[in-house]
Length: 349
Ligand code: HEM
Image (tube, rainbow, N blue to C red; front, side, top):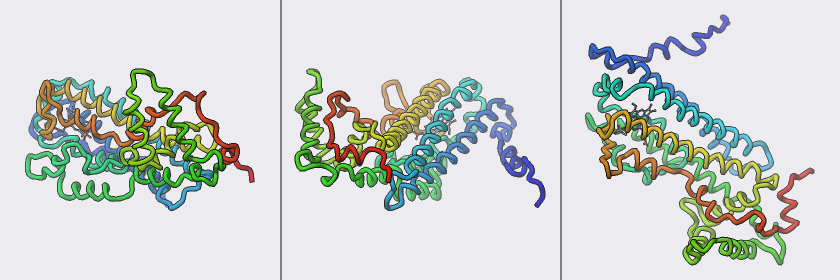
């Protein structure tokens, strides 16, 4: 075997030969188009890594039964941690792109129509892997705009996104995992203190913890709906009970990783939202109220544009964020039976 050579290992000839400014093709020299291309390519490489990490998470979660005391949830947490760090980098990269001014962008912007970042398939696949459903996509009709000059997806990519929305994703698998959590089963409790008496008691404590500005009747109805009947968002009532229980008793050793797992997902939602917001701010300063190259973001002064809409509607784990509504002060948390406490400690056997 010949010695491995840096340039070949990283296939740098291919990568470094992949920046072909449109402006040059039109006989114009627009200096900033190189930065524009490299930034987008860098994003796509990071998106590839994020997809790779999420695939690994999905693979672990797809196994029928995850052994919570094995290293598997720890691995899920580490993979998601990496995803979050990459998102932070993606947010920071906007600063680099903003060294390009609006006028610099104008030098080559019209050559790009109707291509747009909206057509980043990997971005949509990441949303699908995390659990954004096709039906919930903001302005889903845009995806089908396949005619010339329309800025939607080509049929192949459109199908790829649709297919990704039909298979298991982090959110559906999280719901199954939460439902499977054994600690809220009767046999871990006592005759006197069982799961239903616990929730009954917790609901009273929650209502008593509300201040006078809260509408207690409305909160009681919500509590019953989320934890007893309908569930919250895409999660069933029993999955919501498990998620709340993990959050409440997160300091018990067995819940520390599950708690981090839930928090990493909340972090991902937050980081993607921050990215969306920074991108939106950058778009305003680059093009003002003009229409995007993909032709969607027609935001007038009082009108919600595509980017404002996706920022608002594309949250993947709001059910988990909303759990904070139902927390009570730690000092008032009801004690749980000794038998269950033992289950929640580290087991040495
Ligand atoms: C000068 C810089 C940029 C401008 C002016 C810009 C503008 C826009 C606009 C106007 C849209 C809405 C669709 C449309 O009408 O075209 C959009 C969507 C989008 N852009 Fe950019 N963009 C810029 C840079 C970037 C970069 C560096 C990325 C990184 C991949 C990116 C990724 C996206 C994505 C993923 C969407 C869809 C967002 C969603 O569905 O919520 N954009 N962009």
